[in-house]
Amino acid sequence: MIESGQPDGGYVLDFDGERIPFRIEYRQRKTLAITVHPELRLEIVAPEGTTSEQVLPRVAKRAGWILRQWRYFEQFLPKHPGPRFVSGETHRYLGRQYRLKVHEGSPETVKLVGGFLHVWTGDRNQASHIAQLLDGWYRQHAERVFQHRMRLCLERCPPLRPPREPKLMIRRMRHRWGSCTRAGHIVLNLDLVKTPIHCIDYVLAHELCHLRIHNHSPAFYQLLSRCMPDWESRKRRLDGCEA
Figure 1 (cartoon, rainbow, N blue to C red):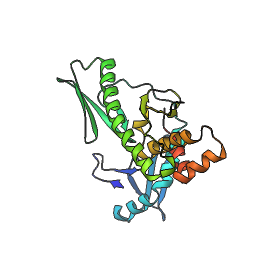
Figure 2 (cartoon, rainbow, N blue to C red):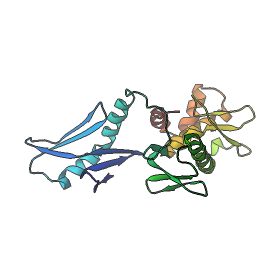
Figure 3 (cartoon, rainbow, N blue to C red):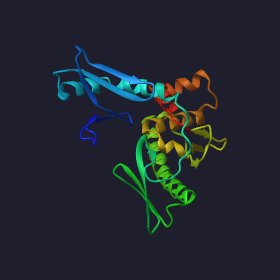
Figure 4 (cartoon, rainbow, N blue to C red):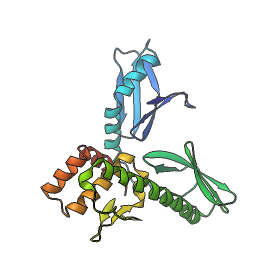
């Protein structure tokens, strides 16, 4: 989907949880040129005499290719410093980006409204406390989202259904999105709630398969492919996210 009406007169390509801004430049040329530059800039150059109504559908048609190029170059950029928890900062939820707005006020709470994460706190300068408020908000939503997605995964793939619904636990993990315990519990990384839904479903399916097969043998991947035929594309998308 392409959104128009941006403040700078440009557009935003909204595709697979990524929002990529661009403008259309008109030059003396015969063909449309779509280029993703390594510094993460989408350039659209159209022939003079064409209109945005002619150009935008062609950009939308190339959305998949644009996103693949964007994510390829993204991996080579320097890692961003940690969040400072100030207004204007970008935070993710379910694969989408939201701007943080910090307000002084009570009661202290966090609300997602439109494209913004609003935080009300007694002191806007206490970054650690704002981080705690956001952490609590993410954890509350993660518990609801993960539980709901696990039940859907179990409904859609009967071979994964255990005698009892697995206990779901949420923790912060530095290098893993999920794991399962010997007792049959599934542990998910809290930051997984920041990734797209189809990535969450992949991690859940992966761990549910491990409750049946406790290794990465061919039998494990046969079961995973049976329950989620497109698991490899989901894994590639997840690999582009930061744990």
